[in-house]
Each structure stands twice: as C-alpha cells, then as structure tokens.
Image 1 (tube, rainbow, N blue to C red):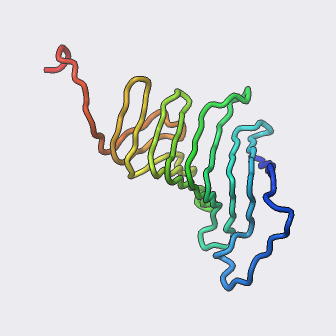
Image 2: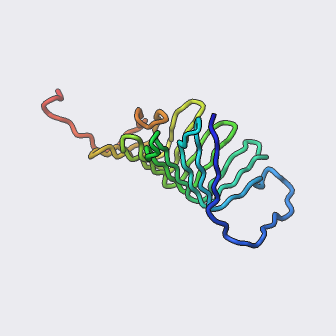
Image 3: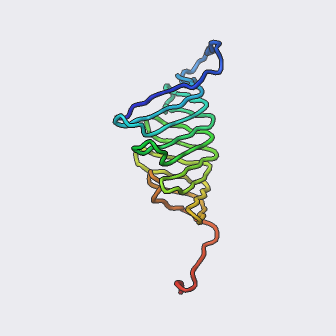
Length: 177
C-alpha cells in the first residue's frame, strides 16, 4: 500500500484567496497548491519525490485528473534513497481513474542505466505498465544517439523500440554482406 506525504514549501501570499462564483464545479479545481514537494512511499519506504510550482486537482471532472501547469520534476529512489531515475516536463496531467500520466513539452528522462530520453509528449499507463508516445523522440545511450517518431517501452525504460527510426545508421562492412 502506498502512502502520500505532502510538504508545502511556501505560500506566495498571506492574503486569503477567494474563489469567484462559478457555474460548473467540474471546471474548477477542488484543490490548488503552490510550491509543493510530495514524497510517495511504498510499505513505509520513500520511493518517489515530486516537485512542482503548482498542483491542481480536478476531482469533479468527468475524467478526474491532477494538473501540473508549470514545471514538474519526479525522482525515483532506490532502497538507500539514492536517485535511480529522473523525469521532468513543462506540464503534466495524471488521470486518477485511468492511472495514466500525460507529460507535455520538454519531457526529459534519465533511466536506471543513465540513458537520456527527450520528447514533447509522453504517456505512462500504470495499468498496462508501459510508456509510449507518437511524437518525435531522441535517445542518448552512451555515445550513441537514436531518433525517430513513435516510441514504446516498459516502465523502467530499459526495453524499448522506436516505431519509425530516422537518421544515419553505421554499418560494419566486414559483417554485412
């Protein structure tokens, strides 16, 4: 069972903020938090840290979601609380019922092996345990760079494929026929 710990870092103003009259509750966030650092644990061990300037929860939407309209940063920790992997993007949504993350604009990931992924759109489906995109993707793996359109991977980003690869592909003349 996962536990969630919220730690607000600071408030921008000591003045109370008022919600103006609205007609559709689904279009208004049920919660608005700024300057948030969230620690997520599993069985009492901290596994993730999420940092964002703004976090809005649209709990009455037809498809309820959390919205991070400004930069969001994720870290995954190992048992010794050392960072294993990192994810950042300019905006993100988490659809709570579907357990689907949608990361947009300047999505950057470093996986467990140190491979670097860059794209403008990425989905992480927690039900199917896969990560995917139909957008352009750039992957740096050591001294090798791969690019293309469309991408699918396991959750750890260790087994992946680019659907439409592009670029130069070196061929060893001694091993090719």
